Length: 309
Image (cartoon, rainbow, N blue to C red; front, side, top):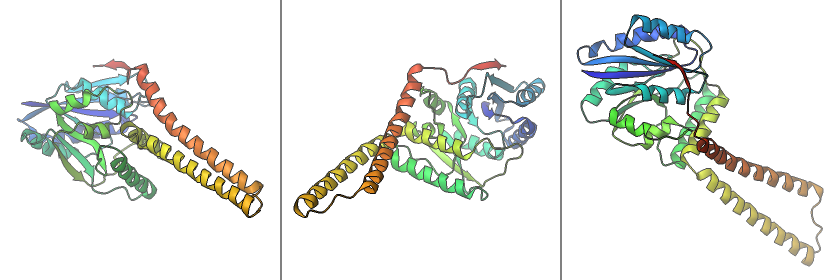
């Protein structure tokens, strides 16, 4: 029988782990006799009783394994740790909040067993209507990723997926410190099947994503797979210089040939302020890329494990 490793990153998910465990086991009943299961929980430095809840599950089920970080390193690091420790023939990644429907796991398994696909990925067919502004920004992000990078992210794509060993090894072969898994999953290629599902409310706990965290995550994704912002900064600088040259020639002509006075303080103040702001934006864009280089060359590990079993 094939072994399925289910990687579940956890951060302050104490209240929902029991329900998650039961729901997954119930969802995988159709695979009895065809596949075995192991849980790979990753405690991402939780401040509640998440680790104790995982240990409680592990004490009653030898299929439950876990590792606990020394502090919060983020979901990307947690997914990486889970995938690196997974022993299964097939490895699935899903969130602990049950917004990823476990009942789709048997369908994923059957698709991989057919041999036609190396990975089965998921996307939401609709978004949470309560977060209208976030939905708009999300659509803008997916549009920008498609236009500015060489990876085409499917709108509403989730980290919830199941992959075979070949696909997993391709993902793990990318050793970058600044990881953006949604882009990495697409960049490695292979044969991918997409499944869609409707939005589900969290069964317990609170979301860990604020607007600013999502914005930072989006910037991480764009700068990880595109140099267009740098090219755009250069192009904007060229256009600005041309504009300044044209205005300079115009002012000289008006002064020498038409004896018109040069505009005063307000015009100069506005121009200086605008172009100073433009320079800071360009420096900021370059700073983002330099900071990524700085993080990469230090070669720090993406996570530190404090305890595992």
